[in-house]
Image (cartoon, rainbow, N blue to C red):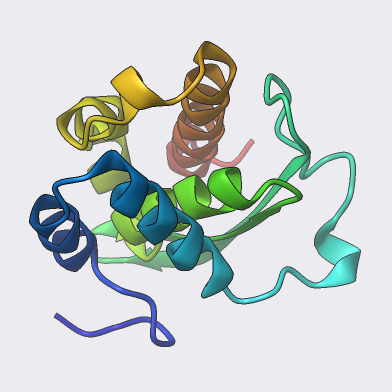
Length: 149
């Protein structure tokens, strides 16, 4: 597993999560993941990059690398003004960033969300925000696969 700029792989995150029994520790860990996210450049904080449906402010920038043999690859950068949401972005980026559009569409972040016990512990607003971010990532992946008009 190679790290993209020091970000952890999703398997490492899941592994660490499973070592933490207490929800408080998991919560702190998610916030810690968010703190380690690279900063989103100021020019990426645009309305177009804002993810609607999140209680806090969330920005997500998608960079599409041209097709290689397995199709377009998408790189995501994200930020939020809420610590816990920033951590959720970090988990999503670990899962999706640097993957091909087809892989992105086949990965189920919401199932992972429940596997990590996040659904039970986060407010419905946060859970909906998470789904909105997943939706944004998937729609960008679908757009990348759509033939250029």
